[in-house]
Amino acid sequence: MEVYEELKAKYESLKNEFETYQNFAEGTIQLINSKNSTLEKKIDALFSIVEISRYINSNVRDENFIAMINDMIIGILGVNYSSIYLKNDKKLEVKATNVPNQASILLSKKYGQLLDKEEPFIINSKEPLTFERGKNLGIHSVIGVPIFIREEYAGYIIVEHTLYDFFNYDHIKFISSIANQIGVALENNLLYNQLKEISSRDPLLGIYNRRHFFNVVEEKINENPSIRFAVVMMDIDDFKKINDMYGHQFGDEALIETSRIISEGIGKNDIVARYGGEEIVIYIEDVDGKEEAIKKVEDIRVRLCDNIVHCGSYNKNITASFGISYYPYDSADLQEVLSIADIMMYNAKKAGKNRVEST
Image (cartoon, rainbow, N blue to C red; front, side, top):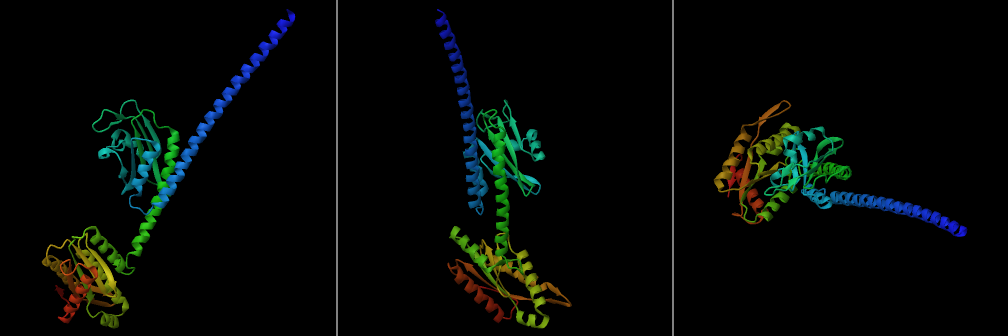
């Protein structure tokens, strides 16, 4: 009996030790699984950030890259709505959104003041913050993360979900990383567009160069084959004599003044470019009749003739000759239309200069 009791006591002791160990092992396994799950989520988030970064950098030249990023946010986070706002003239403007009629929480007077702090925020509300159009299902969870370009506040990412308490501070970390990528991409995009603009303009006159003129007009023709427009070739009269008599500085100033007057005399969809030397080419869009184009060019000619060019001790007015041709009436080939306008311009010079000749 005594042996039995001794063995029973050992058994109970071993059993308790085993159960203690088993509980410890199960707890450890659960902790490891939890840590592995958290680590997997972080790895997934990091992978998504890397993919977004790669995507942004490869599409930074695309004009729609902000909308592309917004679509990626919706897909990765599985949210109902996402909007990207950028500051323009001290006001936030929608640059990309899938919100119907842009009825975002951002527009709410009640919560819009959160944006003034230029800090990340989370709103979780059991009562609907906004209602989806045509549905009773409302927005219950919103997250906002500011965008900065070189530490300067530039906008906000606003993400919304219909589920209550959907967003937490892990989402802030994730979306903040996207905001940082957007900030870098916006800066690169701005620099790219600035370089693109500089490369498309004549360094002296500030108007477009010949290459850009052809690129834009040919693109317009490709987009709309039935387009109608006029091409104007202009050449300053006796420009070589002006340079010889008054110097190249006066000649440059004459060209600058001529470019300014032409730019002020054309429409917002028209294009003016330096064709070469003292020759300037003008594209006049939506020409309904020759009289319309001739009147516009004649007004420019008169303003140019009445203008006094000031340079050093010289004050002198200059004149120019203009030739006009029409697409597709004169030709359906852009080069041919330009050649015809050039012929018209030389006809104007032969006829006495300081005049407009049209086909």
